[in-house]
Image (cartoon, helix red, strand yellow):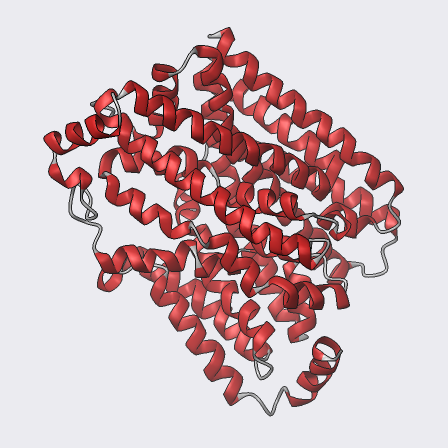
Length: 488
């Protein structure tokens, strides 16, 4: 156990606790618990909005898995990773004002709230809530495993003890502080991620004797390490360009990202978030993936890619600085987990319980239930993460892609196409999820494209065709929706 590495990491966790206690005072004084607990009373400024989007989007894959793949594949993977540069800009540009205005009109707390009002369908709500609970529950559990493994590798504690520390850390500040605590901690974590990326990249370049020397070493080992096609020539132009569907266009359909677009305070804040978020994502994605590639000449022969980041940090930085830098992947994991935790909780409490079980529940009951459900979910994920089943890992691989295929068109077309209706939304969700699972299982990377591309295209076709065929059936409901959502 290296004390110089551990101390900065635990100081970081202490700061997170204090933020949770700070945010809890807003829950005690607010008149609308749901708006505060799940949306921070829609008071996010530009900087916090940008950082919470970056921190939520950046996960263990950005700081652990991505650099590990870059180590194996080469600079081609860095090029592929940069398709994420415009993600935040794209999300806020597409959703932005229109989504926020509509969400405020109907006082939507969750993405499913918006879908419920837009489509006036019980089945849209049930299918949407079920997708969020199932996919994100499993994705969250896998992230917890990553957080525990990181603490275990740094402290020498047993896996179970490390998992307990991680679980308690996340649960305390989410339960007591809600969305505001998540947003503020995401900001701190985003700053840590940004600074950690810069430090580790500079340290790696210095240790490798400069960029020119590192590139020469890579080319000597395998010229394809410095080509856009990857060491195994698998990164074709079609695959790289289609990858943007997963990490660019499709991100609009991720509930944990979309909910950020309804939580900002003003248009000025949103415009500032567009610029800040794009810049920060660019630095983090470029820096972390370059570090993964540049680590290869310094630490050759690493077989497990996920260990590249902690090993290179310990190799090229002083122990105390490595501890600060390794708080970055911890921040990335925690910032993703806290958002997913709150999102699954809101799907159960707001989207299912208050809509169909007990709509007349009073504020005290809702408050107790929200906190209780969040705690129970955390405990269940803790139990699952102790010995995660193989199915859980498999679900995590396609969870985000499945959610994108399910939600992207009901959200975007629901905002911009007035003829879209409930039948089209249901068809889109069902087609997107089923086709994604089938392609992922039997025909991954069909026609040289990323697996998510064809399901997204098929779900769009299903949405448009079914909406047009059933336009008369939904005419009366659509007229009411039009009056409520699109009227001034």
